Amino acid sequence: MSLSVPAAFATYYGPSITVPTAISPGANININLATVASSTFVTPPAGSGPPCTSGLCAYPLQSCTNPSAFYVAIHEITVTDPKGNQYMLGSATTSGVYWPANQGGGGSNNGPAAGQANELNITTSQSDLLTFGTGATGPSGASYASENYHTKAPFTATADTAGPYYWWTVAGNSYGSNLRLDQHSSITPTMTHGTYVLDVEGVAVCGITTTAIHYIVFFDAAIVVITPEFGASFVAVAGAAFALMMVMRRGFFGTKGSPLPTGN
Image (cartoon, rainbow, N blue to C red; front, top):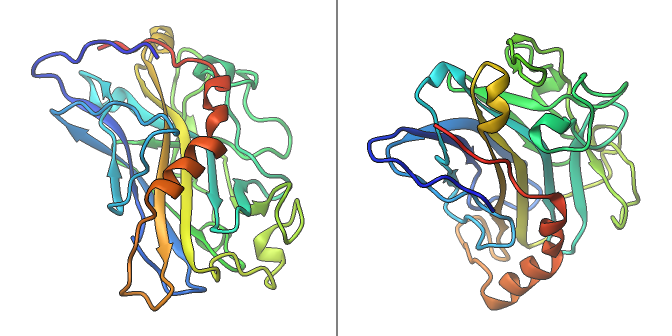
């Protein structure tokens, strides 16, 4: 991983993810996506490291002298339940979110393919609220029209036409694969007692010109939510067994490529 040395007196920006630390069995998990600013640098989460268990997971990891030039682009969100069933955010027709080549992904730089969900772009003045649970989708299926779209140089902000977003089962899920949760209310993804892992991947970008390609930091944040065995007041975070599970399940991290260099 290539990172620039944090500069003295710099301001760092990055993703901020807020989730409940515990929910009652069957309740929804509300996921608030926003940005954070701090004078303290935080090393970008790498997925295979320790998960965040505090409920407020903030990662100021990108130095940027112009806050209006900063945004977070989220390219993948998954939830894994205690049984190993995985659910992925996607569009109305398929799971997965657009990830362009100029942000380190495998997609083109011309926008998402037909039917694919657009990336979630969040500036310093914006936030998104996603809901995961039985029959859940985005906020009443609404699109995120207030977001900005920054993928093609020179990164001119234009109206985002992304959304609505939906949750899907993926291959290996005991309920079956390629099932949209809002269309299958019999799927109860938060009824299992134990540890749920939310995985948020994307990049933090600073810049509004073609040079912005050089100011991108990749992050892969693992976040824990608990469905307690004995009610919502009982919270327990798994220890060595959970850490081993995370390393084994997320060992593919190194196959995604290294982040692009950062800059000020």
